[in-house]
Image 1 (cartoon, rainbow, N blue to C red):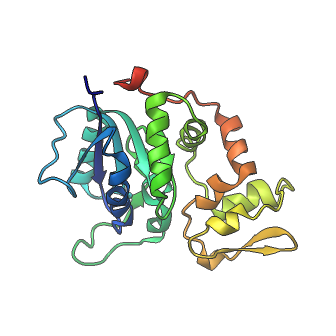
Image 2: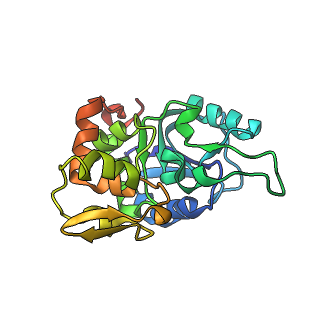
Length: 238
């Protein structure tokens, strides 16, 4: 008898759709074990159905009542909700948006989805890597893996960016000079000076990638919150 596939819902609530494209790129890695429901692969996705895991991309516009309501429906429809990509996770570059533009000038405030609903995992990245998404989903199903503690703890953080990396790790003397943050930055906002990273503020888009890639910052995050990750019991529903 074939193993029952894990039902995964993907919804994009607003953004550049780079992370939505990431989900499409990840599909070939997931087909064997996961059943993906997304408007990008089927005509209509029902929020009345029940899902094991929901992947949400894009930041939420608090002025858009329809999207806010949809986000709450997603939380009710899924056992586990993961914010995928920096906009959904921490707001990312949309935090700089001021709105006032056509076609919807009343849209002015964008926030991470955790502002509206409880989120079990956040995976920042602009966008994250397909292999990382696959690993996180597999860890959620198996109930073990380093990613669980890291991204469950990250879900409790309201912000982490190059600024926070400097404050929490570099300026406190905890940096080991490994350069992982510099290599991970999508905008080259970090540079190594005297074996330590230095931030170029005008280039930082507050995506948080550097923070979770830093071994010191990730350890601080995990120890600070000591979250018990929510998983799917026995490879099925939580």
